[in-house]
Amino acid sequence: MIKKTILLLLMIFVASCSANHSAVRTSKPDPRKSGNPVVQRVKKPIYRPATAKNPVAVSAVSVKESPGNVDGPLTSSEVVLEATTRVKVTTAMVVAYIERYKEVAKENMTKTGIPASITLGQAILESGAGTGPLSVQANNHFGIKCHKEWTGPSIKYTDDEENECFRKYDDPSLSFKDHSYFLTSRPRYAELFEFKKDDYRSWAYGLKAAGYATDTKYPDKLIGLIERYQLGKFDAEVLGTEYVPVATTKTNVYAQDFQKYTVIKGDSLYSISKRFNISIDDLKKKNNLTDNTISLGQSIIVK
Image (cartoon, rainbow, N blue to C red; front, side, top):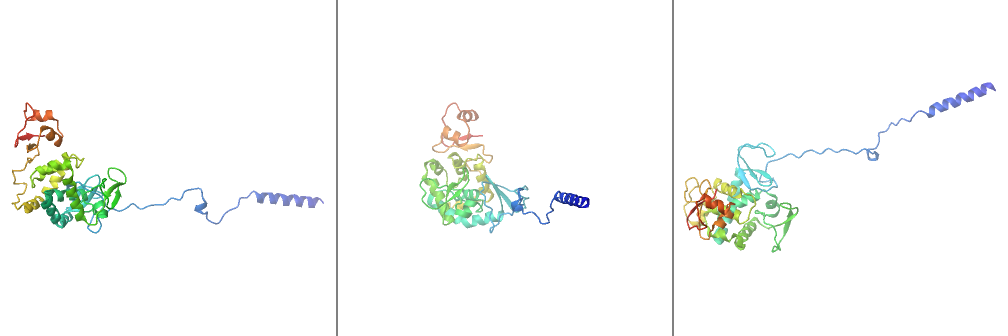
């Protein structure tokens, strides 16, 4: 009896010890059922320079060619076009763009009086020589928004505001035509047509004064592009005059350093002050004027 009792107690003790051991899992836990998040690694996109077959979807407003970084070092043949974003294109791409659209710009100049140099210069700036998103996706080379009167196709693009409405064209030449209509149909640009057709400098500053661009350096950027690629020669071809490179010309309204302005018909101290963002009082002080009277052909210091 005693032996049976001892044996029973021993069996109970062994069973109790076995129950205290934790079970060991040999299979791996399913991450989908785990409370811990699953981390995914995403490769950083690799920047590739713009090419004719692989355009970079950004717009452009100025040009400079020098060593620097725009998602990578520049090569000697690359140009940086910059606006709210930057794009790298080659000089050859810009030249090819000019060659492609020069006749369209010249034809528009014949019909409307807008210098071909201004049209081409603005197109290069606004479209990044045809590589910007609006020019690639919508054939819109001037960033023209829909406005109330537009009933044609459109595209949504975030510019000054999110998802703004921009016009979409079947062909880029229609964008050039619409740009000419845009300038000729709006009263605020009427003053531009008082300038000579080959006076791209006055046109450039006049566009800024009329509110075409908010960038204070827009005229200088436009002029720099026109002179860099000698776009003024297309104005001369339309007018049947001799083209004189800017390095030797002495007849431009704006001096080489952009310090003076020659008064033309319709000018007043007020309009000049608005054009060059300078007060009337400062204009009078700089030019030793006792009143607001100015005369046609008078040279006014504006900076």
